[in-house]
Length: 58
Ligand code: SF4
Image (spheres, rainbow, N blue to C red):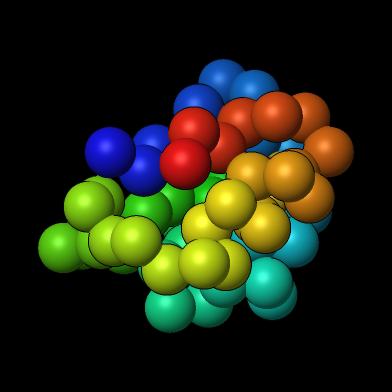
């Protein structure tokens, strides 16, 4: 399951830039789009690796 730790997220928007199909921004935090929790897009790992605070679990 793809997830974003909202406690850790600093709202930089990088995951949304790298993988906009899966990650959206809302109220200054990233979240996984509805129905995308089990997505296997390659960019998910890329987003997880790019996240400066390690908030994304691919
Ligand atoms: S890359 Fe990480 S810190 Fe930046 S918005 Fe996404 S989850 Fe938050």
